[in-house]
Length: 517
Image (cartoon, rainbow, N blue to C red):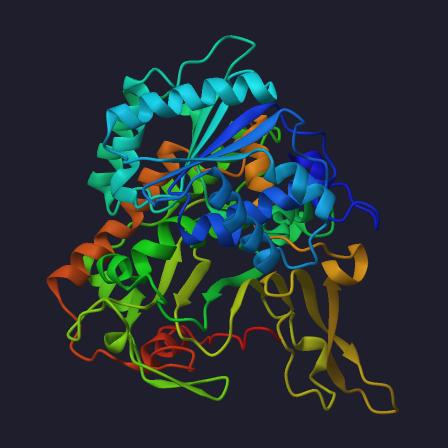
């Protein structure tokens, strides 16, 4: 995987376009009638097909309760790709892929349906030469994860052969809803699958800038020497959304922003930013270093939770000139809900590189701007040289990894303004992927699906990482459960969150940066 990340030219625009075709297999999508399949998975498969990254011996089987047949499923997927591919569809590439789509109606709890699926897969293998290898993708509600795996095991559909047939299972997040449930789910699926067959997906890691963190940090000699507590003041990680809960109200009201975003998305960004250099770019070597960071996060006491965490829930407001309702008015949300839609945290990592350097994390819905970024704030240079000059203060250098919507990296530093008087001005150097390498439309899933097909687990979470992530947030969940919020809703839609989030930074003499700048 990393060799794809670290090479690039105007002719090699994204990592997944610069590799060999994936291995022969059938991809089985459980829950194929849902939004994830039509908005993300099928457009991603089309992009891979167009880039000739799919094996000629590849097929897709959709499995869901909806009353489709193969022809109607192909028609729906054609419409989905036309709508969500992000570009005019190349007819030849899509027609070839479309002819390899199949559908089977079934219930996740019906053993007979899995036997019928097994028979369909045998026919697909015969027709398309998939060699019996299967990539099972669980685009289902989390409550069905264990049941689907049990049914696959009972039907004998996850057996592997040395040097030949393989079976891998991709799990969408969330993987459990707390530490105990994550451990229970791990224990349940471990009865059927080995860890090397399990791919816990985080679609944020399919984004080019996230993958480029490794290359940026470890391939550039000018940054690694200053990537530590001697030179860095603090780190801010922001994942902000302008959308509300949309059609996920029932799920979201049970989960909340902390469960939905922090143990997976934000902790993945934090560990890639803070990890030590791995001994190689093999999957487990990289994930070993990520796991060390999670284990080094300073545990939060109940008192720490009260002073170093903030939760919020959006009220009505304006976004892009449009009035939007309060969270409690969203479909399938309780009108008295105390579920948080915003979280801000101050975390400390107890290791030699990051001792006493705070990591500030925030995420929320219905915020002012859709943006995901990692901001590295450096310490100020000594002022002694400028005491006899009109310079009033020195700004802190700032390195920002922009993840979405515009992927790139920017660096802010001080330079002299031309003229006879010594004055300093901020200079911003911008690198944007689109400007230098060009861009191709992506959903964020292309790299992840490709990696799952070739057996590269680098960008997928391991069991110990999932459990340690839950271990870090459990004290927060426990305190918040014991002390329900009294002031929800406490921020207007279209703002940057509750005032308590800004106060969290101000107590340390810092402030959240204006994202996107």
